[in-house]
Image (cartoon, rainbow, N blue to C red):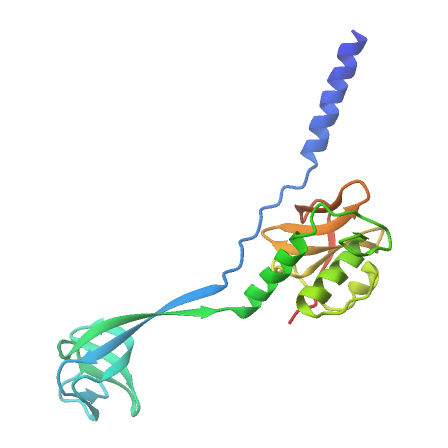
Amino acid sequence: MKNKMWKAMGLLGILASLSWTPQVEAKAAEIAVETSTTLYAKMDMPVSVREAADKSGTALSQAGEGQTYEVVESPGDGWIKIKTPEGEGYIQSDAATLIEKTQEKVDKSVMQRQKIVDYALQFVGGRYVYGGVNPKTGVDCSGFTSYVLRNAAGVSLSHSSKSQAGEGRSVSYEDARAGDLVFYGKNGSINHVALYMGDGRVVHASTEKTGIIVTNVMYRKPVKFVRVLN
């Protein structure tokens, strides 16, 4: 009977601890390449570019056969609004062939931040050593973030989580990006720092028992998010 009671209490304890585990939805990953599509009108014949969508409207300029113009407004009622050196104007839609051009823009800051995260992840499984400054031999939390940002991004930080918390600008969790720092604390005092990976995760030198690991950003309640990158 006593064994059954202890088992029941143990099960209740497990359930209670699970019920208090923070449930946080991971944020979407950043996109390094943005794709945009622009519509152009290639003239099939010479035509007047007019101020208004009206055949009797004032002509701004002449569009020659073979010339291409960016479309400002999609075709409607037989007219297309285009952008010309003389200003925006209208041409008849049957005088041109519409062409779509897709362009890709690379966000270099996203790529740099991912590079920092990738650099940090190579040390997962490494030892936690209080006062350590090199993840190859053993490192503590602030030693880890300092080492990673110095070697992956050329950013110099103090070897102290409390000091690092004042070496950038604060951002909200909603605005946090990969490569930002996440600070944790107790009774109003910061005592731990991790590197934010994006997607609601952090990589950090956690404890002597666990070493360098990846966890949910809300494994403890964050005190502050700080951006030290541009």
